[in-house]
Image (tube, rainbow, N blue to C red; front, side, top):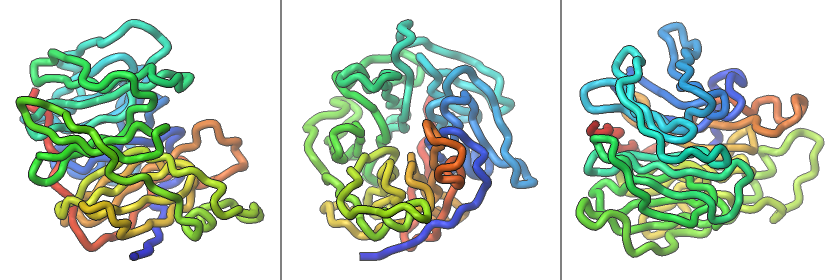
Amino acid sequence: MNRLTAQRITPSWMYHAEGPCWSSEWSGLAWVDMLAGDVMTFTPEDQPRRQHLGAVAACVRPREGGGQVVAVERGVVVTDRSGTVEGEVTLWETPDVRMNEGGIAPDGSFYVGSMAYDQAEGAATLYRIAPDLAWQPVLEGVTISNGIAWSPDGTLAYYNDTPTHEVSVFDWTAEAGLHNRRTFVAPTVDDDAAAAATDPGVTYEPGSVTANPDGLTVDSEGAVWTALNGSGQVHRYLPDGTLDTVVSVGAEQVTACTLGGEDLRTLYITTSRENLPSDVHPTAGSLYSVRVAVPGQVTRAFAG
């Protein structure tokens, strides 16, 4: 098994960074400061550019022809290249539930899921947003709908509902959508990596951290990289479920990851300061990165 250590590449700019995505559409990396409602990109001076879209900006992906599709608190908006909103759809009115993570399917649709603010069990839903912004629920009764990404051939979709403590895999076709759900892996925390992410002076007890699969991405070999929130690590699993790589991150609340850079071999990792006192984990809310051997896939664009 490979062990890597991610390096901190930004200050703690974000409160709750999530959903990193590499695209030539915006000449590099985009991500969200979710609970600030901001889509983040880098300026040429390597400073953050914030586009504010409301109370929540949960997930961002490119659009075919330019612009972005963004999950906001209770729906989805599409923007043009300048950031101007061109269309939007609201999926519910209740203030108790917000959008969370998502991804683009091989047919160009946007799969995005929700969660209750109080994380109520079974209160969330995974939706499919069509290119014309028509929408439908495709998986109900979930709790914290998180990362979703597809295998290189588009026949498998990997998905995290975090409180299940497992990564699920579905068969997928454009006609049938998601079907035949089963367990891909049930991650366990690597004690060495978890100890490395612990604040100095805090005694780490092996086995004390539960694996909480959060955001994920799939590389060009079909291996699944998943962030394990609360553990300070990202795992890479081969298509047969074998643990191949553990990345140590210097902040426990890792939220998501993506593969980018010109050769798609830089793993970018987002972290969160949500609910942390100011003197705990001072590097939380930063971006981290590490170079890896296998490139990612080119990010699919929303067909709308």
